[in-house]
Length: 495
Image (tube, helix red, strand yellow):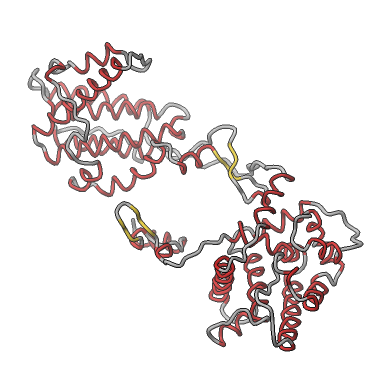
């Protein structure tokens, strides 16, 4: 990868690199997860529902108006704090905390929030939530509304604040932090930080201030969790939304996907296959068992057969294409490793291992008195006895070289090839969750459902795998060309 491309990739990602992770056994732990006192509290899951009133205001009224409203709330809270020597703990402006505010302070705060008719109309969707903490307070404050409460305004409000780093979410989180400072519940380590919080968003470098706000609000949330002040309201809210609003499938408005480069064609593959077969006979010098010759050409032919299937219409963008890449990779690394060692005993070991797997499958089927349509007992028996009578054939239940594909790739100097193709294709091969999610689920576009995953009517077309498959097959052909020169043809169509 070029230096410029590495810099571009780094600028697009704020996450830790692989090198930043700490390895313990087979677990790689990112830096943040190594903190022994870390307590996770998701903004969207747990804290956003506690600030719905602020989300509704910010999504409806001008931002400067809502910021000004919060300043008046903070001033009112600060005045009350100065006049009240013995203040109760756990003061806040979340939905769960508002009912517990001292009555005088709560009355003043609610009067500021619901002072204008536009703000009252914006808050109308709160009346759809009878389980809301302090519902009667909101009901009283919004009495006499001239609009009917509905879900769409709440959807818009949640959509704008669902992502924890969005501008609207940051503004809401600032409101929590600012109020906590005003009632003397939060102490900041420096006067500069206090000035930046109080002066937000017009003071200081916002590239630094916004992360500081989010970190401070997250710290408050961690404290609430630690002190057992969390409530069931967030869970109740999301359940209510799921029960009362429908899932929404994504409506595609994207333009047609770009046409992928043509990796190869069926005609090119057929031409290479013919050349390969001719070269097989040209280099054949014995009718005795020759593991080196047979495995080298056989691996290349097997890879070409997989490639022939991939060029069929629609296959290269399918789930099966990922299986194909994974198999092609293993074939290529195995051949590179065998060629690197170039030990006749090792070539033979690989061949005997394969015959032993056919014998194992045969015996397992016979033992279970079962049949399998994809392979017959007769076929397996023939393969198990191909080189020698099966009674003289051992079955290796481990790896044929007592190794792993990774170790072979490292020893043969092709670790980069392994890293490029193995992890993600193996995820598909083993049916791990990320592959299932990628191919068969989509986001529900109802923000009140937290963008949860819902099934697709059919698996989505995936990225075209043909160019990568051609690159792997060409690696195999290059190895074969070194073992049995000269072999020039390759499958990739190069411009």
